[in-house]
Length: 145
Image (cartoon, rainbow, N blue to C red; front, side, top):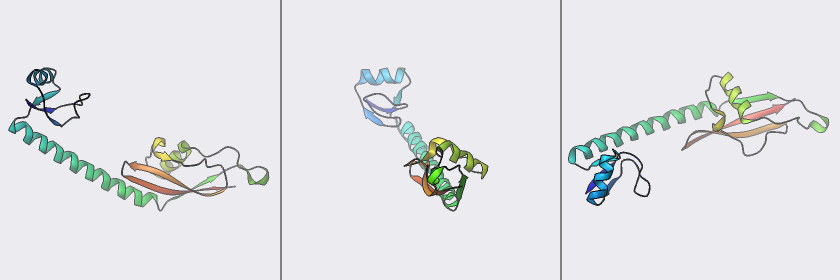
């Protein structure tokens, strides 16, 4: 029996996969609304869904690229307290960077801010912001007295 999965099924496949299974198992999946028979109408519907998902994904990537171009022109400046020998008290966290971006009109979640090292010394630092799985922007962060 040929079926189309409506949701992820463990050890079988992911949503939208077309599988060849035994009749009893196929009936079980159809009864539990985890699959439908792979008829011509259902295959056509699946192709339309996949095309819509691809178009949506392409639009999301395009939007992320536009935001990346804007963010990479931006430079964030943080005033920090320093001690003897210009050592910074504490460090700048991803949450603080996200709040500063929000002040500048960008809605970025703190989980999207990826720092490779702690921002705990004066000067310029590069910080990555993951806008999409395929799009990452790098902004400059300046720590000064």
